[in-house]
Length: 90
Image (cartoon, rainbow, N blue to C red; front, top):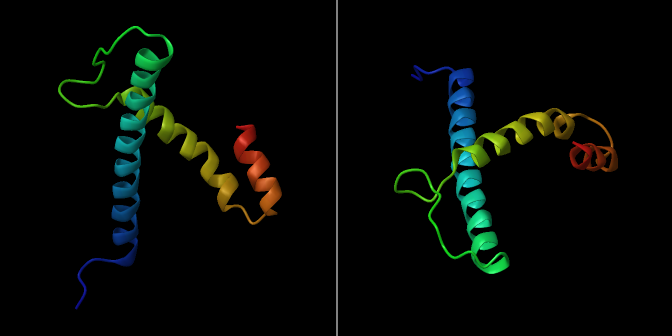
């Protein structure tokens, strides 16, 4: 017998996905900023990560806000072309 309901599992899955996206965006933002510092501006390496990890939470929060804004457009039943234009317009 399954004790958990299906809606509970889907909410947990959504939170796990958002948590993973948050950390991926944090690390990608850190990588982007580090490449700009070292390769483009030639300032040298300085670890701007939070504590001892290579992540910057501001990039994670910005990425989640972007995903949250684009999610209704992508999930709408409209034409693919309109959805792509809508996502890049935001």
